[in-house]
Image (cartoon, rainbow, N blue to C red; front, side, top):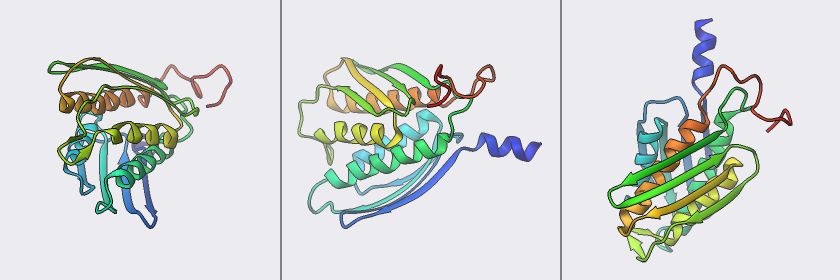
Length: 203
């Protein structure tokens, strides 16, 4: 019984993806403690993913070798694809989970809303106003591409909206942390839920 409970509490996905542009190895534990070993070759992106793991209380091990001599696009987009697929796999049949997650998160002057639904239908609504080409070594236009890739890989309806803010670093970091907190809420189990939380009987 104890072993069965332990297995149910550890929802873990491990996957790899290799193309001519990127080589990715990722392990995600939705029932972790917020620990991460992350190396994408993009310092600011690593910082954001560490924040995602820590504030979502996910354990995330990630190693990416990408064609950074070109730019950051393939590395960030492909990481989003693999992370989204890992979320989908780790959640499993979605039985007993809350399904919806919502967070309004402050980051100094920035205020970011994130709302998501693990419904199986991918959709992204993205409303961040970034006016710099780069933050550190991260091309800011890639923030949308990352969340787009995650939403489609995971099969989630994802809304990210900037309610206030002017500092690009704060806005982006607030978005990653708000996403982490919303996802943590959505994958939480509720003993009152029998099967999946849907009138259709499936997600």
